Length: 109
Image (cartoon, rainbow, N blue to C red):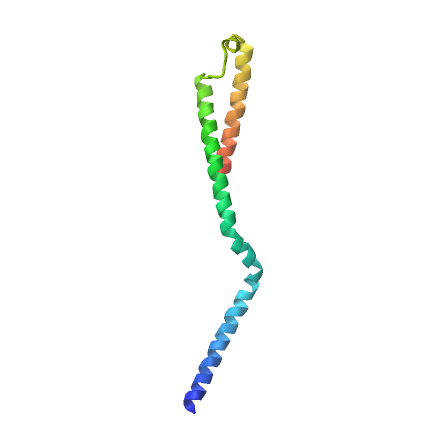
């Protein structure tokens, strides 16, 4: 009989501990669906950042080529446009540099 009483006391203590644990976890229940979706969201974010990195590399190469004056798509007639054309190219280069810098900052955050 004493063994039965001890078992019942142990069971009661275990049930009280479980009740306290469930009570502590109850406020977190609304967040479960968001937490379940988190791995998918992280995977999508990583994929997007990888694609942005690839595009950023391409733009960086283009900017370096522009800085070096290597414009393979430029025809001989375009080379003859003179100073006005180079000013426009310089302005475009500054815009591209600005965009690249913005993408680099966005990739960090």
